Image (cartoon, one colour):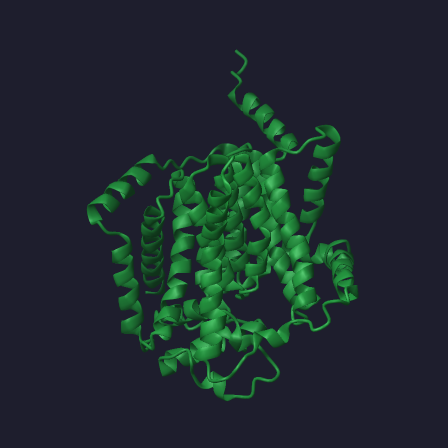
Length: 462
C-alpha cells in the first residue's frame, strides 16, 4: 500500500512539474526534461500548504490533496496540447545502457538504495529539523494549521521554527498521505537530481568520464548523509544549481524561457533557505556580462536582471516580511541577527581562514567532503598549465563556484548565527554540483572524451 501511495504522489508531482515546464515553454531533451519535471513538481507541492496557510485554509487531507489535484489539472490545460506534448517527449525518449555503464550504474544504484531505504525506515534525526519543520508539521497534521502549539513554548534557545516552510509543507503532505516520518520527498529530489546531472555531464563528456565523476560526487560523505538526514541544505543545493544551470544555458542560447526558468529555480532555492537571496544577487554580474556579450541595451539588461531576481525577492517577502512578521504569534526580528560591528573585518578574515583550514584543507575536510575539492582543483590547475585558457562556459561555472565560496564567508560575517561547523559546512553543498559542471566543461576532460569516442567508434580489426 505504501508503494502505491508513493507512486501516486510521484505521478502527481511529475504531472504538475511537466505542466509547469510547458507553461514556461522550456524545451529540453527528454533525458533532462523528465527529471527536471519531477524536481519542479516537488518544489511546486511545497508551496501549496504554505499558500493555503496564508489564506487561512485548514490543512486537512481533503483540502490539501484536493488543492494539489486541482492545481495539477490546471497546470496541464488545455488537455489536448499536453497529451500531444507527453507523446512527443516520451516517443523521443531513448533508454539504452552501454556495457561500460553497468559498473558505475551498479555502484550508483547501491548508494541510492541505501539512501532511499534509510529515508523510508529511519525517523528524522537532525536537531535543527526535529525542533523546527518536523515539529510544526506534526502538530499541523493534528491541529490543521502551521500556526500551532509549537509556537506556544519558549523559543529563546532556537530559531528553527522560524526557518522557511519548504520542508515543513512537504512533511505535512507526506504525513497526510500516511508516511509517519514524511521525508521520502527527499529521495525524489535525490534520484531526479542524479539523473539530471548524469545527462547534463553527457552533453560534453563521454559517458565513462561522466559516470566516474558522478560516483565521486555522490560519494561525498557529508553531502550523501543529507540525502536521508532530511534538512534544507541538500534541496537548497539542488535548486541553486538549477538556477545557475539555466542562467549559463541562457548565456549560450539566448532563449528567454531559460532565463525565466533560471529565475524560478533561484526563487525556489531562496524558498528552501532565505539567505540564498544574497547569492542570487551576487550572480547578477554574470547576467550583466552575458547581456554585454549579447550586445543588449541597458533597458534590456535591467529587464533581464529584474526577471532573474524578482522570484527570489517575492519568495523572501512572503516568507520573511509577511509570514514571520504578520502571521506567527511569536515575533522574530531578522534585523537583530545582523552583525552590528560591520566595520570590524577581522571576523570576516577569520571566517575565510576557517573555511579553508577547518572545512577544506584539513583532515576534517577529507572526512566531510572526501577528495572532491582536490579533484576540482587538480583539473582546474592542469587546464591553466596545459591550455593556458578557460572556455567561456567553464568560466561561468567558476564564477558561480567563487560566488558560493566567498558568499558563505560573507554571510557568516553578516549573520553570526551561520556558524562554521553546521550552517557553513552544509552550505558548501552548493559548491559541489557547480564544480562538477565546471569539470564537464574542462578542456582536458573534453579532449579525453573525444579520444574515448573515437576509440569506441573505431572499427574492430578483421
